[in-house]
Image 1 (cartoon, rainbow, N blue to C red):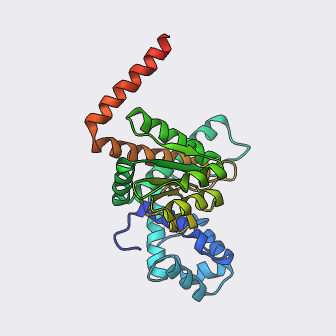
Image 2 (image 1 turned 120 degrees about the vertical axis):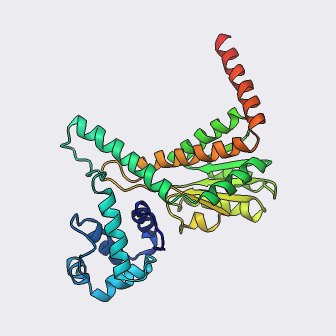
Length: 287
């Protein structure tokens, strides 16, 4: 995991492994990231004592996260902290001024975008774009905020003549997924990757032979396990905003990249359809 790793990707990759950790292991990791003085010189003994666990436990967690040992973990985390310390946003507080709130919210989104780019798997983007461009029927599944993201990208695709159906009802998801086939593609949108109805719809689509894509924050989630392609966003949590707010911005940008990749595969058709849809909208406004 650590060889040639972009320092910006260290924090997100560790966050994405969080579902695999026990509560105690997660608490140890949190104690490391809460230390503003963490560096390449921080002793294993200090980390263990601060977290109230044994040194062997810290080493075990480092390996579980994909590092060769504590020293490898320490160096990578220190690089991440050093790189991002000037960019890190403090958590939002009810006592913040208007200027502080605006600054923190924007910095959280900027950091989510930069870190999502740092972990981006370009091959996965290309594969997802191929599935969508070549698909006969395209089903997008999502609940709540995830459904809004699905609608946003479906609207963009429609402008260039790529039709997609968005479903946010469990029964409609299941019905549509059951009618998919090998020439179709199903995309599941779930920040946690654990939204049951979205997971079940993607499972049905996969059993029917459709290509499946997961848009999530966790590459080891249940949704990711049933997807042919996994596209991940990442964002730090905040007591007031939660984790979803900044992650939503990252997901929208991620999907914008997919949209452009799909359009690029037949740019003449995309441009022609865009002109047609724009003419239709202008005519509607005049009418």
